Image (cartoon, rainbow, N blue to C red):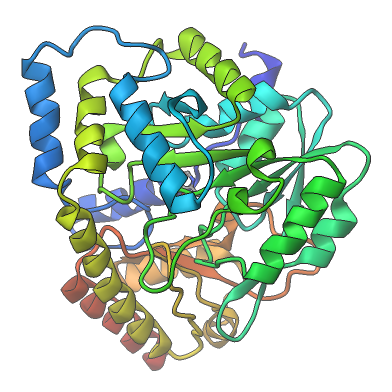
Length: 397
Ligand SMILES: Cc1ncc(COP(=O)(O)O)c(C=O)c1O
């Protein structure tokens, strides 16, 4: 009954894990939610107040498709300064969330049959949208190092062929928390320029970091004109449910994306954009508090995971995800299938997490096993209690 293209549309399978956790909770059990990258932190009060004020002031009708001008200007200023790139309001197209930038970028720049390099493990929407819009999804991988995960640059280089047109980079990376080194970025830039690739730089976690400074691939010479940035208010300001983000793109691409806005949603929520304007231009203490809370959770989570026999977990400096290696854990428990691990842990301890399988199909030759935990939606005492139960359960088995 449904059109053929619907068979090519994927889902964000982390939501399926939520459903399993909700079903377990409905049976009267306590759940420790590490599965979804949602946040249990409040949006800073000044942002809420600004949006309410705008609604009361009558900002409840349609607004320009590319977004209200003061917000586009403020975001251009913010992104231009933080990334060190030239950026004006003409480059900014406001979106209902960060996610819509992915599909609109592909619609604006990818022709049927074009090959698109994307991270695997990675955010599952890339593969879904590439295939839905008639592109060819070509995965690239990350390799586990001692302290961080690294891009497999040789594999990326080998995967580039005559039909490759686009590279999707998610630096600071969901699910591994990895950040590309200066060398890695330079090699990617070389490849993008040599092969005339467009780059979608998904910077959803640009501001969720605990030390150092984030850097955008768009800031390297020759890149601003071939990069589209995915920006979102979701994580930095704990605004996941407000649904507001932006595509930051060279003028011609921005105009194309704005045209897609006209066809899709007309405009992002009008009064919500005034909340976002306050987020960018008002008091920043709320955003700083969010990062500090997340840092405490990261430390609690990493320490507790490394106390679980058979688990090896890095301490990433960015994002709110952990991607521990559980190869030894699965061997110890005598489990081979990821779902068996996930359900066994949920039933025995209430700890709910995603596995490698929720971030793309495992690639040939991939021997190590991983799970992914998000600590954005769970407090430190619950982290310690839940992962303590996990440790005791594993130790007793
Ligand atoms: C890598 C990545 N990109 C984009 C998004 C989309 O964020 P938004 O809630 O702003 O649509 C997410 C959300 O989890 C993400 O992890």
